[in-house]
Image (cartoon, rainbow, N blue to C red):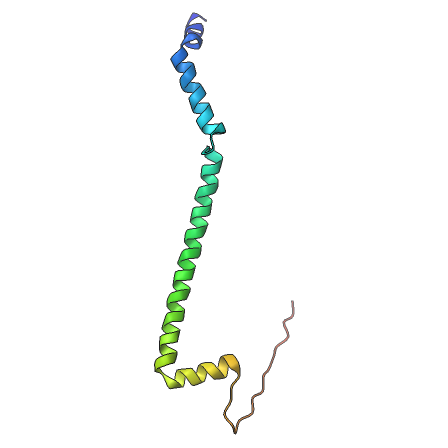
Length: 98
């Protein structure tokens, strides 16, 4: 009992405990906000990696389209349903059944 009273009367220990409690729970940079910020950083890094891959793919497609006329014709036919003068295009749409 005497030992516990001695620990409680120690002003340095009480100050350290109060500071730890303040930093962990009440500070603007507390543990909860740090966890939330880390999750946001991870999500933003994943999005960044996705967009970097998309930019790389689009850049290579653009290079291919500007250098190869056959690829340009194929792209125009598939994406914009373009046709030659003597051709007819039939678009078949499949019903999606859930």
